[in-house]
Image 1 (cartoon, rainbow, N blue to C red):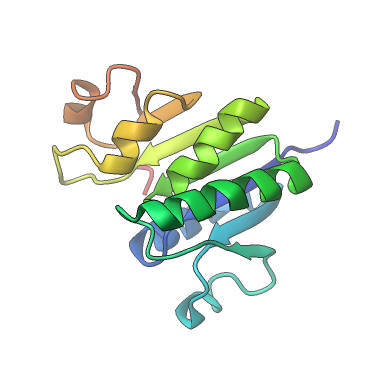
Image 2: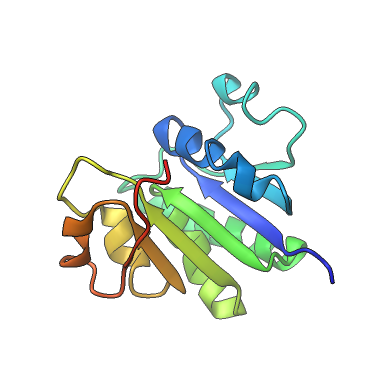
Length: 152
């Protein structure tokens, strides 16, 4: 059986680093990344297939729309089986297009020490196939969420 292909969508910085920490999981699969073009990431993503999104993405409607079009193009071309993200603003356009295309989606809300929801989490919670939280208190705020524990 063919292994699934994964699209890893992440904003730069902490979100990228947290996704990278899941390497024992994602390294077993065919994959590609969508993130920012940032020289600091080149060590993390050396030898990985990368597409570059439009940044800044948080609360930027123009870049949201550009990333929505980018998501349409990339997901149509790559045809992943799964889309995965830990956030932030780059994720919602990709999850929306994934839902339209019938691509399974997994979101991991990683803010372990916070009882607050994130804007990306609030949006993605409604149309992701699997929404994971690492803080039990967030189960009250995201009714469809599953508790993942401290996997990061």
